[in-house]
Every structure is written in C-alpha cells, then in structure tokens.
Length: 363
Image (cartoon, rainbow, N blue to C red; front, side, top):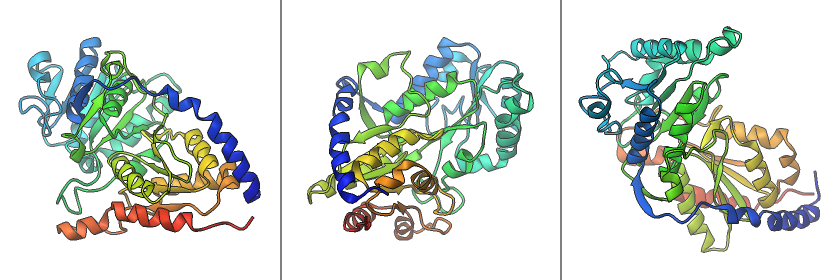
C-alpha cells in the first residue's frame, strides 16, 4: 500500500491531468425533455430507421403504453410492429426471442421488471446463452425494457431492483439510464446492439424533465454501452450509483459542498459491462468511495464495486475502507414512512460521507 504522503502528491498530479477531460462535456443544452419522451423518441427513430425493429408487451399499442412510453407508435407503425400481448410474460418473451433468432430486432416491454420473473428462464437460458450455445452462429438482438425498482407504495412484490440479478448473467448487457440524455442514447444503443440488452428504467423518472443538447436530439446519437459518466467532479470522495439514485447523490453532494467536502459523482449508466476504469481512476483521485443502490445489500452492485477495489490497484490509493448504502435487507414495506426508511435518503449519504472522510488508514 502506498504511503499517505505519496498518495497525496500523486493525487494532485492526477487531478491536473484530468482537468482537460472536464472540457469535453456536451454542448450547452437547449431543450427540455422528459425521460418518457426521450425513450419514446429513441424507439420511434429506431423503428423508422430499421423495419426489423418492433415492440410488443402488455398495453403497448392501443392503450399507448401503461406509462405512455409507446404513445403514438401504434398509430404510426400499425399492429404488425406495435403488438399488444396477453398477460403472459413467458409466452411473449419466448416469441420475441424466437423472432430475434430469425434476424428481427424485438423490443420487449415489461410493465415492471418484477413481472420479468415469469420470463426469467427465457431471458437467461434462451436469450443470454444462445450465441454461446450456437458457437456464434445465432445471435439474439433483443431489448428487454421497463421500470425497475421501487415506485411509490408498490410494496414488496413490485419494488425490487433487478440490477444485481441480471448483471450477473454472461451474455446479457445491462444498462440503467438516469436522465433524458441517458434514456435516448442508451435505448438507441441497445436496439442497435446484436446482443440481448436489459434496460432498467425507473417509473418515478418517466415524468421528470432534463435539459438536452442539440447533439442528443440527433437521430444518430448513441451512448456506448459500458461507459460511465462523471456527473459532478470532486476531490474528497467518489460516489458511484445509477438510475434514480444519481439524483440523490447529486443532491447530497450539493449539501456536502456547503461544509467543504468535494464529492465526485459517477453515473454508471452501464451495469454490465461496468466501467471499471472510470471508477478506479476516480478513486485514485479522491481516496474514498461510497456506492448507492436501492437493491438489497447481499451480492449487490456495491458488492461488485467493492470487489473491484480489492482486486485492482485502486486498493493502494484508498485512504479509508469503502462504504455501501443500499436498500434495507427486507421486503419493501407498503407504509410510506417504512418505505422511506427502507430506501437510501440524502441524510444517509451525508452521514456516510462525513463518517468516511474522518476515517484514515494507517500508512
């Protein structure tokens, strides 16, 4: 392990070398767009671009989508490409995977990822493993998308985060958009990918508006799968998270800045593959790291990040042990006060960072 003095000097050099990276931000935003409209426009543009793309799921067509994400697509593309299905996730998921085997590019909408458990055999055994089991002869270019994690008052059976579940599966790619830019770029990248891609959206983010640039609105805009984004630069502690929790992390970082603590916030965007380099390079700069997720603690995304810290040279740069903030290790309660207690809150992040910045490894 490096000495504390060496780490301090090296960090100052590292910080100056990353200054140029901050100048590579996207052009100034000019338009407000909801996450819902970002996903809708991405699907629309990809369906117009490639006639092999179609979408199916419960209420995606005549009802315009349970969350209105598919609004207008049925009227534009008709019943052959926007398909209402019965309430049988295993059935329509299997049909879509078969279509992907035959060179079509299906988008499967789950009304919630909790319902994907009815189709998990199809996703894992029929989609994720097909390219391997066919010795590279049969690809499965399919997108599975829908809201993941907690909504509001949806209780134990409709509030699970499936990031750790699906990101453990070889053959799947897993992404989790936070804002409208993420939603557009990752959705388009997923549809164009020749592998099965899981998109973990968030119901409570659909109606939230974010500024987007002219670049993001271009029809050829995509975000590479496997690349994280530094949403806020900092020098004292790295906060790594994804989906709705990015907003929580940014809010906590603002609170902490008032007391002089500088937080770097990383929006993972991609869960599998995970952007190890961005996380490691950030920790080399800050020396401390906190992960945030709404999922359960055991075998979670934070656990994987902790393993990266232990198994890479990032370990030599740590000034304190990593800390994880997760959902409570219980089924999600229904009562509002208990639901809030079971999910990460701003005060949890602030308290954790304050505790972490006071810790120091002896070296």
